[in-house]
Image 1 (cartoon, rainbow, N blue to C red):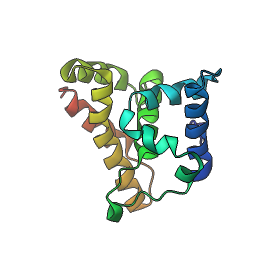
Image 2 (tube, one colour):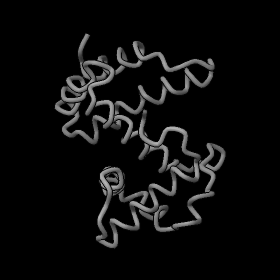
Image 3 (tube, rainbow, N blue to C red):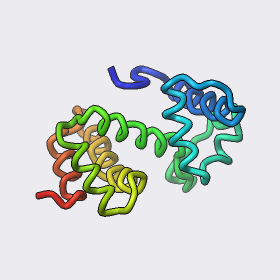
Length: 147
C-alpha cells in the first residue's frame, strides 16, 4: 500500500508539520518522518510555511492566489523517491540515475521528473482513470535521454 494512502489532506499535512517540528528540535524521527524531514531540509523556500504550524493545515494553495503548494511539491519528491527505491515502474531507477547525471543532482532530476508525474496525475484526474504508467514512464525515459 502506498505511503499515506487514504489519509486526509489535514492528516498528510500534519505528518509534514510533525516531522518538521521534531527534526528542528533534534528529536528522534520514525523512518517516514526522517524521509519527510530530509525532503523539507532541501527546500528552504518552504520553511516559512512549515513554521506557520497549525495555520498551514488549512491554507489554500490555489492557482488564483498564485501560491505554490509546498505540501504537493514535497509529496511529489517523496513519491518519486519511493518509485526509484522500489524501481516501479521497472526501469525508473536507471532512468533517474541517468537524469541525475544529466542535471547534476538527484534533486534536480526529481524536479524534472515531477513534470511527467504531474502530467500523468492531471490526465488521470481529468479522465477519471488510473494514471497511465506506460505513458508516464515513456516521458521519464525521454527526460533521461533514453529512446
